Length: 147
Length: 483
Image (cartoon, rainbow over all chains, first blue to last red; front, top):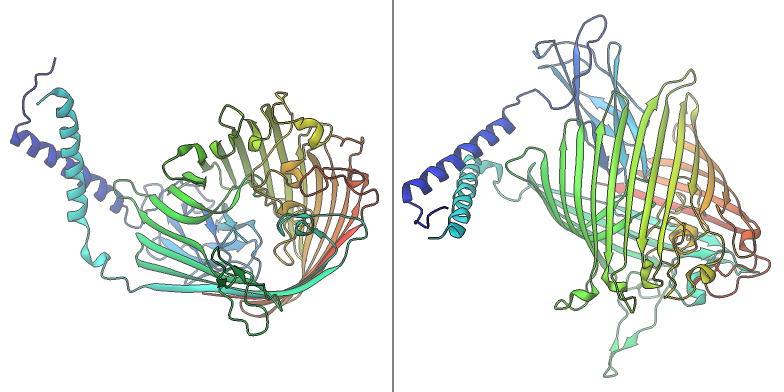
């Protein structure tokens, strides 16, 4: 049975410190990815043997929004690779990038839905590195549901 | 100090430490001041010409259309402005406000009313201000919510306030603006959320009038081209408890698979879903249970010259009329029909579903939230085939053609299944970037299901007409999206 003693000040201090530590670890873990992006790694591609990650893997957007998507290319050890060609094929609208080749291991682009098509639907964007194609599903929903 | 107090203090210390560490680690420059303001919205001018009977003719609201006999043609213009403001001091937080003026009908001056003391009061509402002199009081709040990234777990965020929420199943179960809360998680291949919505809140000191909606939804990208999702919704509807002696409830258990397939002609986007629904005391009108399934499979093929798609949907139903099947509020029989709460399905047809031409089809899907709707109010279910297509005939013009066959899954009280066939044709001209004009129409050939069918009326109890009209709707829509 646990005795009913007051919680000593130093115990409380230790607990606060432990909380601080846990919080700091959580924060550093959440911020420490650098250019690495989360999610499944696809590949290796042929012939380059690259591995590909795409983030986000799913997007829900209003037709007027312009979400950003990132494709990261890395080697088997997870090191980012430079100057790898990444192509994008949207099922509708456009996807624009500042460069079609990786810089710092990534290509970042912006998706714009087809103009005026505000009916709810699912579009997709195919990001391809050599022979590996990754599909991002884009759910387009009305900006406001109610009428 | 007792053990009962020790544990809370230990937990509080840990939480305090966590919070302080998080606060200490926040760079104050992340929140310099509320200086990032995004503004956007859309402006719409619309015309509608139709012979669909508005439910208002029979005592209901404008929502909900159905065939009638020798129905009058209605024709009107309306306009609407929606604006939003997004305060985004950082990527971690935003406050969203969305308003709407309209829909204001041209010439639609509405009579003023009077309060209990006899004083004249101006009509306040979305449709006022269209008459001579304008000056309507017609501003609505559509959305207000706060959203921020939660500390401790990357990808977790909180949203609370009034926001739009819709299911992933073609909006068959629920889609509208609601007051509630959401916890959203998004990271890598996983996306999930928990949602709580409140439908009714009468007296705040009395929980007997509440109506709660709970939902949990998750999706996983399972391969390069395929994702799978699952959802559970639970609706606890004390608002409609009435004299039932128990609290009505409904739940929906659903799953969806979406995939991009390749073919010799081009990529095909395939989507299939299955929803099981079960409940008791639907809208407080009956004691019995209900249960059923809603199955859908669709494929849209992208070709060099356009897109063509097919969809088939089957919703289980029970034979007979609503009057027969409900049999009074004390009926305890099980009804083998799939039911929704807000059915706002789109997917192509202008009249059968919420149409893309003028946005609100005023058709069969627009009866919602009353339990008196088309297939959220009759129990015959349906078998629906949709063929849809879109062709970019010019760089700024696309042409859209849709055909649909609509059939009940179980016969009505007269033994009829065939609801009808719909054809739609419409075009969209993108005049300037974000400014577009859409025009076209839909024509629905009514089948025998509508004849002498009490389910084909607003309240589901009035007798149906013996010779329902074929129904049609034409519209134009000029819209500018900005922001």
